[in-house]
Image 1 (cartoon, rainbow over the protein chains, first blue to last red):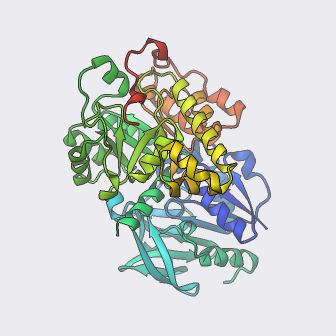
Image 2 (image 1 turned 90 degrees about the vertical axis):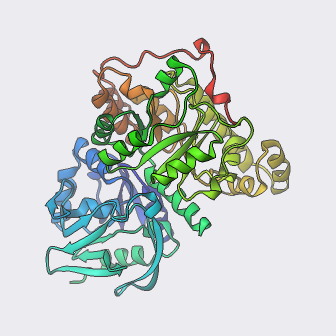
Image 3 (image 1 turned 120 degrees about the horizontal axis):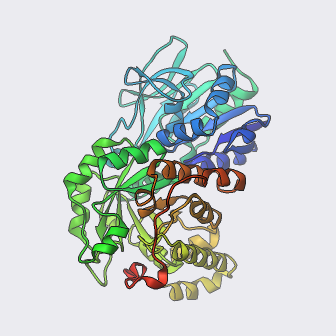
Length: 193
Length: 291
């Protein structure tokens, strides 16, 4: 199995380290020629979503990646990655990959002073998962009935799945608990309904 | 609680990696920077080149001006306070700045002590020109380090020597026997625990950016190849002929810093670069402030 990690900006090395610990081969996507390599899944890391969108489009990556996800490539987005996958922001269509039927709120907890840690349940994955929120977004609402809400913290949706797409508002790549990455790898191997 | 904030603040710096942080003086410049792909902006009244030209005492920017920039963009906003100026830092924390740069670019407020940054909830980035300085700043609570370079000159030579020196000192620590670390800590004038961390991990415990004199996509790529995890660009963008284009080119250069062909394309037709001053021509070495 080979997992592509979007390495335009942000905390992509942290994702690579987790996957390597789990014995999964990774490679970095910095431009179109990287993207054309064979792959079984894609991870979109945390970072600045505006920066990542800008780089995706100036490097000609936006459409090929969007198409691959629409064609069924498993994808896992964390924080900025969740924002990139979302179709809407505060009820309006947004620029990005726009493959997931969710409406997001960016910087939902305010500036850096609003960043926090929490423990929470992720349905079917972990009872008590440590969650790190850094200038994090949350999901206002699902826009389609096939979006599963996997986790809520303080009444806000922070983890969702829509078929082959998984997204969290927090950063599982920053904590030692690898349940979410394990779940994602399992889904690549044995996609469930 | 404080320990928790330190971790969260180090983690915000992790999210900035592979990005470009740009100096801006107006909301309009901040928007240009954001649209060009900056991962954060540094709000300040005068960019280092103008601080240098104007001379006199240089202080924290007007909070109203900083707020204007906070309202203009959604990316993190940083601002500078003077070295050792606890009250300026408190003011910046009160307006919920995302990162404080305790910066040698401003006139130092204290010739001996830096701010005890562990007493704050907002994160701090500090300049360092060698490993000892970096570890002392981290001990004081800095959650991000940048090279000092020589700000406002458009001359990258100092930033290069700072990052090279830091990397070679790190390699030296890694190669040491454990029983040699106590003496190394003494020589570096840094806490033993941090020296031990570097010995074991081969890197600083916080993110390390390049800063000072970066003016072109090639400069940015050079700093990344030398081991910087991201780049601050101060005067280089808005002192140049075509800020939009140069800013976007530097952002791309940081992502694809090893692709010379792409860097060649990015370096084309950028208009005039900032004129710059050679290191030998300047009278004030800002890097010598705050050790």
